[in-house]
Length: 626
Image (cartoon, rainbow, N blue to C red; front, top):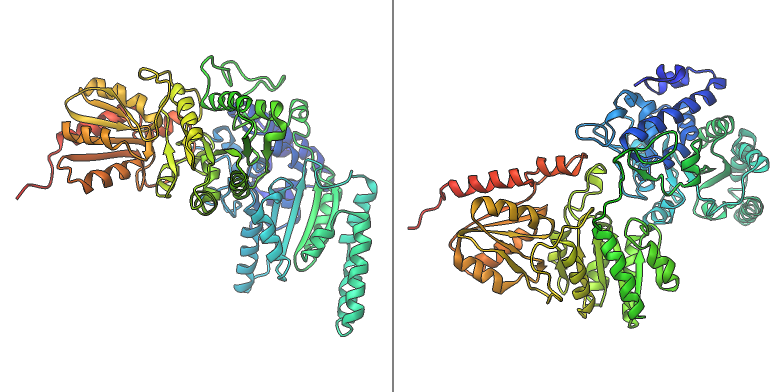
């Protein structure tokens, strides 16, 4: 891959700091073009990164990274950071097996001070770093960059509330790219930001505090006067009330203003917050016009923004997400009690049509998974029937609410859990590797995993009809064709036989039923689609144990504590004398790559399953009867 003249000489921030200031806008242009070219080939998150090109340059110019700690929230916007911190030659392998992660990762670079992928963690992590540095006698600046959407999460406000009460060397950069909490930016606000971050204002402010320290009544009056004056001119009163020295808003694409303001704020002490306004997709018209569409993209043609040949091609086979969305809309037309909730994942969770057709019954709560589940609990208390559409990886963030607010009270809430199992290039931070395990131990909660598209719809309906908390977990991508005779309805806790064999039986859950059938055909084994992790189909298990000497459970979930463990516990309690093998995700985090590469790495392809099961069958037991 070739680089433009300035970018070719940037192998780290130290090179960046040697450039004359008037060269930086040109570098920003080159960096933006390189980013577009890279993501057009690899796919990935684009719009957010394009929006912070100037901000990224300014941060690395002003601060002594990695000595000064730079923490990115979520990490969707971190590609320019990766390019400027010595990884531009590896960007061709972005989000690919053995290549760069799509998110900041501590193991990848000293400049990635905190591994991310989930939202709203930057403030807490940065505050912890600032406290830790001071404890060790250091005084580096810690900078957290957080977006206006991520700032809406509860844990971000928890960190702000705590951080404002301390006197740590913490700078928060609020990257406002939605104009959602600010007024328009212009020359006046930029001038005010430079003024309020400058040494004169800071000296007057700190000097006044010192002079008035012994006059508490006058000091309190002066403090209120300052806040009211600033509040009339800019939207910073909230942050000031929380204890942060607020500066902004400023134009996040104006490098001279950014650098001047950041240098002024670097010299300040204590918690401070810089509010910058940026534009998602900046500098690339297709992304500017459709920032949501270019949030995460497949490889595309750079000139047009259209997907490359074969990339992002729509399949005639519906996805599990589409099946869920269609089922939800059809049911909502029949039952006015249905309300749908999502934590900022409308498009990804298949709720676009529902939001359009039933706007009064659609609630996007923002990046607030905990609130999403407790909101559902409250709705259920009043006789409504909420359906929460959520990714498996994000459900982890609301585990207490699942247990305490929904299951403990046995409330009628349906959880439609998308992206169960491995998800491909987004890697370990976004994989749904643990849901079957952490959900099956919760009392009152029904847990189901459909094996094909027809069963996905039927299990969603069974969950809806059940008068208690239910969780239906399905994978990303195209739904499997019916694997058996489609059933009009499915009773809670009922699995099914799909193939009759001898001695060996494969007990498969969810996505793993289809490859299990292929393997069983080669090995002459029985196959059971278990469907439910909780409650298990005890009648089916009794029949399987009675007819087979070797049982193999297969799931795309962590083996430890997963669906196979549930089967083990049931069989052990009833004295099963045969042998059991559990196959699933290993006890480690699986790196980014294509789903096929990930499944192969975990032994969950047809070939991998067959090899493991043949070895299991051929290995004698270590235990002999007395």
